[in-house]
Amino acid sequence: MNKNLKKVISSVAALTMVASSVAAFAVDFPDVESTASYAQAVQELSALDVISGYDDGTFGPDDSTCNKS
Image (cartoon, rainbow, N blue to C red; front, side, top):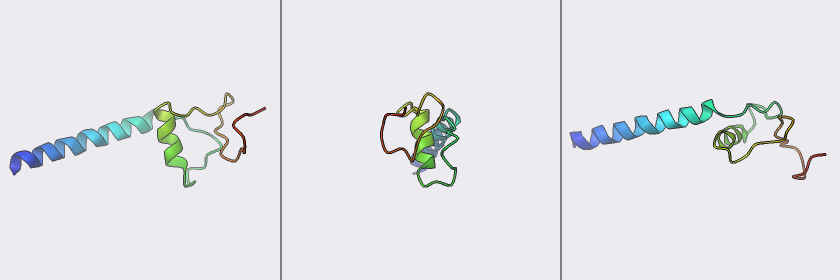
């Protein structure tokens, strides 16, 4: 049991470090309020290069189209 507990604790510690490093590389979009329900998802997805926002540095959460003029 002690051996398994050490493995669990090590795994949790490793996952915590990975999760915190992902947040460190997240883009901070000026038009995404930190209190928005989607703010954490936007931060994490931008850190993983899944989303990138617009060329002007905004995310455009209120835009109704994918194309920005």
